[in-house]
Length: 133
Image (tube, rainbow, N blue to C red; front, top):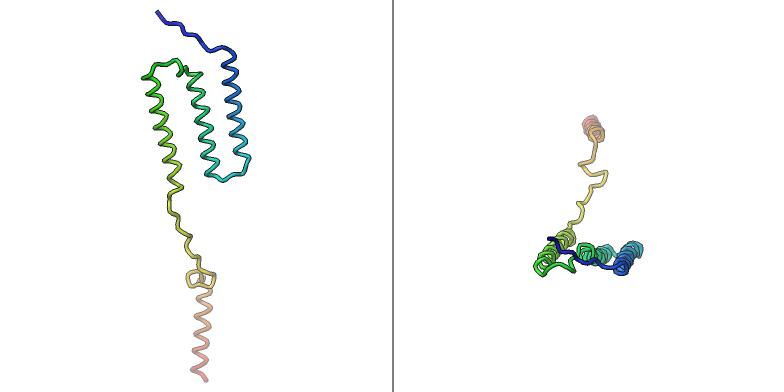
């Protein structure tokens, strides 16, 4: 025989809805503030964690679950937070090197074959002119 459990009343659902709406408004406000990317990511993650906790606690009835279920969900959530934090820290901790210096147009590497041919012809003419004087 299944055990019936009481669901929260409409007032509880209204409070949870208002809380989730406030968290969504906070996310939107954070995106419009123009703060640094790192601050925005950290604050968005915090707001997302609050929303996830509210959904787990009320809509997935974690408040009514037994202790072992709460522990399993909590450990899974902490491992997920650790994973996301390490992934987010990866690009932040990378060492970036400056771009290589780009040679100017008059550098030897960028000379076209026609430039080389003109220079060779000029040298040949100069050399030829020296011998005929």
